[in-house]
Every structure is written in C-alpha cells, then in structure tokens.
Length: 531
Image (cartoon, rainbow, N blue to C red; front, side, top):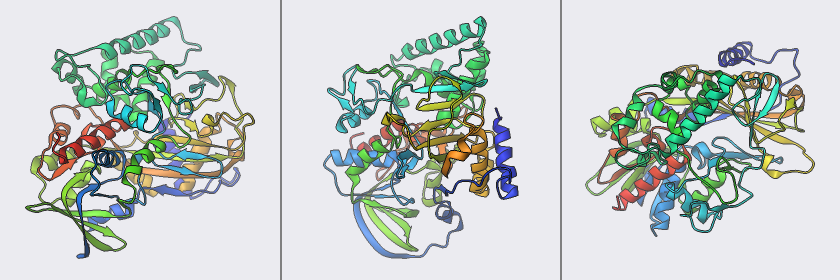
C-alpha cells in the first residue's frame, strides 16, 4: 500500500508532468470542482461597489450549510417566516451537498448519520418529521425506515491482500494484539457510561451536554496519541483504528487531535434501534443530502445564492449586511443576524467585531479535504475475502477508502456504479494543503486516486467512465489539543449580542451533523429570545 506521503508525492509529480503517464490508458473525463474560492478570496482584495439596491427582512441568516438551514428550520417551525438566507455558493448544502448522474445520486461530503441517542433530541425530531424515525422520537429504541438503514455488509477493511468484514482487522493478529483490541472496546464502552461529578455523561452529543467536570475536560490538553500511549495501546491495529477515526471525522491524525475529541468519537454515540444493530448508520445514495433537503424545504424561496457577504454594520435598530451578487452590492437591512458561516470569515466582514471574539474566530484552523466521485461501467474486480460493502476502507493507505453509492439499491443484477473516495490532507499543514488543492490539476488527483484503487481493484482504470474531484479548502475546524475548553471555542459558543447570534459547528470545535444542527437551532432560539 502507498503511504499518505506517497500519495501526495504522486499527485505533485503528476501535477508537474501535467498529464498521466503514457503507459496508462487516457484518464476518464471529469471536472475539478469546489467551493467558489475566487469569490471568497474577494474578501482579501476589497474594492466592492457601493449598494445598488436595498432589501429588508426580519432575520438574515448568513450561510446555507446545515447550521444555517437548521436555524431556518427552527424559525419556520416557530411560525416565523420573515427571514432570508444568504450563501456564497450556487446552492444550499455545505458539507452535505450531493451530485447526481443517470447512474445514481452520490455524496460530495458527509455520507451517513449514526443512530441518534436520546440526548440528540433535535436530530430525532427532524428524523420523525421526515418519516425516517417511526413512532415516538423520545423512545429509547425507535423503529427506523428500513430503506435508510445501511444495508449489510456495512463496512470492510483491505489489509495484506484480503478484505475483512468490519473495520478492525482480525486476520494474522496474535493473542496479545487481540487482547488490546478487546481492552480498547471495553474501555470505550466504559466511557460511554462514564459521568462527571455534575451528573452529565463525560462524552455527549451534542458536545455542549457533556460533563464540565475538570477531570474529563483535562483530556483536551493532550493528544489522542499521547492518551493511547499512557494507556498502553500499542497494537498496530488499535493505533490504526484510532488514527483512521480522527482522519475520518476531523481531518487530523491521532497525534494532531485533542484526546477529548478522539475519545468523543468512540464514546459519544449510544443510539439504538428496534430494527437495527447499534452500530448501524442511516444513509442514502447521496449521503446526508436527504437530511439537508429536509431542512431546506422550510427555507424554500428564501435563499439568496451566489451572494458574498462583505460587510456587516450595526445600527440602533438592526444590522445592515452588504452582499456582492452578480457584480453589484445589495444591502440587506434586518432586525437580527444569524452568522452560520465559518467563524474565521467573521472578522473580515464585521469591522466592529469585539476584540476577544475576533481572536477566538481566528484562533482555529481548518482541515483541507478532497472528495472524488468515480463512475464505473460495472462493479470492479474483487480481491479475496469479505464481499463488497457500503464503506470500503484501505488499511494504511493514503485515503479513507470509498463508499458505494449504489449499495443501498440492493440490485439483483449489479450494473454501473459510483464510488465516492475521501482524502484528508493532514500530512500537510492546513495552509500547505489548501495551496496543494488550488495548484494541483484534476489529472494529477485522478492519476493518484486511480493508482491507489487499482491496487485493490486491478480493472478500475478500464471500467472508469468519469472522475470528478471536489476540493474543500476549509472543510472543518480542527480539534487540536487545547482547542475545545478554556479558550477561543468557549468564547465563540458563549457570545451574546442583542442583534447578532452565532451558529455553525465551529462553535463545537469540530464538524458533525448533530453539532451543526444544534448550533443552528440554538442561534434561532437566541434571536427569538428563548435562550
């Protein structure tokens, strides 16, 4: 298997060459996609035109990702319809956006939702509204729509030439390593039940409901890798699983991740279902886009897309928001503002931002991320071992593996399919990763991705009919050691203003659907005077 550095070197070499090696067949067609970096970088360049028109609304929401849409969801369910959502991109979605082709729909970002526990009240309310959760949302073990429960087999891992069911390799693992695997799982089960001296769970979801006991919060001061060292988890498979989990959810390695955040990944989720195993997830061909659409329907007709917010001014009775759209500035006057865009942008557009808030917004950094959707004319050739699964992970590889967009279709006669591949560029500094994303052509990414996949599926290059690549320069705030408690994140989450409320998963310190939804709803409640 290639290492992560090998993958990045291969992409860089292909970028310098400007094309794929001649020994290979031509690369499949496709596009290099991503957030509108050119429009976003206008904030650095300035030179915006004066307002050409003025619009008025009660509440303006900046950002149409999950947090902004959740704020709109809460407002609409509270019989408030005087609001407008503004987003820089061409449509809503954020990290839950999706694409579609004649073959199938497929994700461009988040692709699953774990079964929510009883603490995830808002998630359960939304699932019940969408018909995904059937019966009482507060039930300990609800019934879920079978079509959304991930079909088996759910996941497998490729290691030493063979596929194995599940994510923790068992083949050719000695007794000592198996013992560490069992001890790690038992330890995580203990942490799921652990509570602080305040009676709260040590690791809850949303994270704001976790214990404030200093004993648990002190874990934020060390890395997850150090915590593993201190508890004598040295087995290669256990260390790999911990590292994979951090890369998958946070875009960081275990050595770069707060121990509290690393443990939260394994210990926060305790959801159960009457008709599925606890580790089952909810998914659809287009990932979490079905959840995004469920939220977005409450904002129908109230989204101003392709609009870059470049200035926020406070007034005695409200706020004025200047937006660049189609080359002209539109001024939006509102009584209240919900900022549901990434925190680091706020100091660039709000000249009067309080100093402490400005520092907190700029204190964090963001993980660069890459997603590719590969169309195949038929299922690829399989190596030996476990059968094809929804989530297919490559042990000790450059990427995070791939999900199969047609897995949920349960076809009797498999045909064309789409594989969604994920990359966390944590081997580079965030700034270097963003530069690599901007400078590397699609052909280089495509060559590196196909080269990695054909080690597992030898015929993947021959079957490839299209390969599109999507770049996220600021995919998610990185939960590095010391970033979650007693610093900038606390300032963001605790900010209070008579006319401006903050939303976004940045206020939690890491990007999960549950966190983004919670922060959006809380911001809506604050502008409504409920929190």
